[in-house]
Length: 470
Image (cartoon, rainbow, N blue to C red; front, top):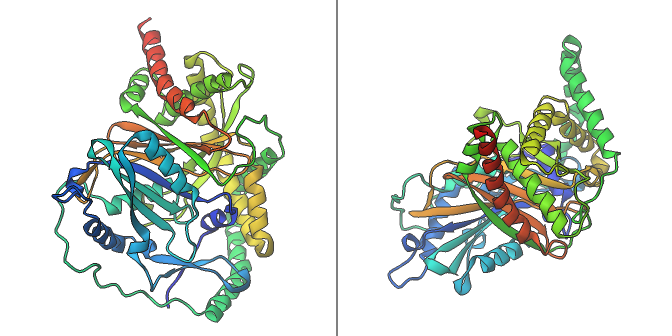
């Protein structure tokens, strides 16, 4: 018998999910086509699927599914899926030739709008044929309960190579894999009851440590109280701060890393400072274009912050993030003033107790088992944010899937009621690749915002260099 219980942070994304708010993350990549094709031009799909099946052996979570505890006494657990079916998880679809970027983005938005099946391992991969210039698309979906953005980068790295050479696979569809037997429902219920019953003992041990050194507890409590207080402050809503439908609109933007390097050559700022500043400029311009108030408002951005240790990369999935709020200076017209304001605010927040505050609140909600779901959903929708901006560090070198070079890769991050805009960015091979997710019925002009982000990186780099030369 073997199983692993989800953490409080992992299960929060299951509890947040509703029929119109899928809680998975993912990506859209564009790959070279030739290495993936046969002599007649068709995709070598069976070989590619079998190749991916073998790689999943290095990431056991990809062959595991959820098992709920009877009567919801405790958090769900991961168990091996004895009926794991790679044909279900890796699929082939096509656009009418020659499919362009616009059609690919529309398809991606539709695929990401669909829920993952909770009775199976929580991921899907779609190979997309029919793109112009003989390219191949790849859509990946993984439930947020599997892990945060950095965990999903680690997961992707297990499926790809640093070199184009492919090690030949055996002819069999899948190597020997023996799923571990999961617990019976009565056994899982009994284990979960015991876990709840012994929780006060673990808390007591923590209390003894707190008496010896109360500072961590005080800091965490202060952070939780400050975070909770923010939940009570009404925000100034943006046009996308409204209930969402089940349908998503997704667009992308490409920014060469050289724009970030030009800024950092003259300013002692982080990559994230540059990202937030360019996004603030694009959002300011976007609000003017859609007729919203401008020049007299800031936007509150929720920025996920990784708390993952160096030794937790690779084979450690799960969510190791906290959330901080950054007031984007969208009321400032000058890009240099915006950069200075972002740098100051982000630096102050990184050193504050707010980083641990939301995590503490989620742990407290998790401890109230009968109402953990409704309480978690309530807390998630009370966070006083206008949007989410998440920056995920990726590999600086090219990657290859079954010998095919990944040319571009864009992230996908979900939206929820009241927060109908998410801006995600991943760095890869010298470029920042942005993926913007919005509600299809709310943000018809989302492409304008993506174009604005590209423009404002260039404007910021020009402004910084002009100031340095002047």
